[in-house]
Image (cartoon, rainbow, N blue to C red; front, side):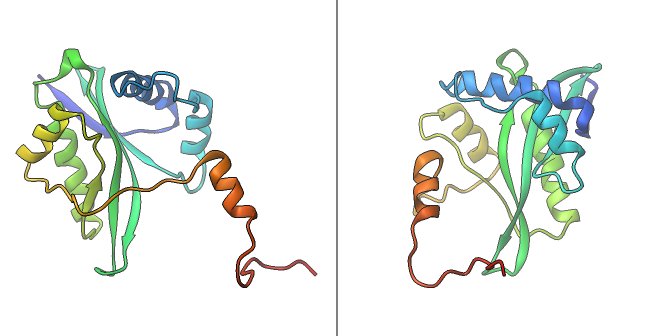
Length: 170
């Protein structure tokens, strides 16, 4: 296997989208993907893209991706990287592609002076949990992820509590 890993650019939007859809199907949420290839392309063309992505290729054929973005640790006082998605199609698994993507991402984190590389895993995804444990990753069982989205996010944004820190127009 001649694996090539490189950063994604705007022209890779269709490939990234295909991996996102493949991951959604694997995670039992095939209808959850709202982003389009056009939106991914637009975001990757922006001056400050909201994410970065590594793509893995075997003989020119896309075989996996790692989509990530910058974070910050207030306790460490340093940047970090959050791995949003790592996906290798089932037919490609067991060949070291996921490991190679994470190795490259770990190298990116160290090159940037990051304090850590973090990600979340669905609790039922035992193959992924075993894979990550095998790499030496530690589960942070004492942390519970919370999320606001959709109407709950909008409702909270409309709630006025305490002082308003938003800039006022004059």
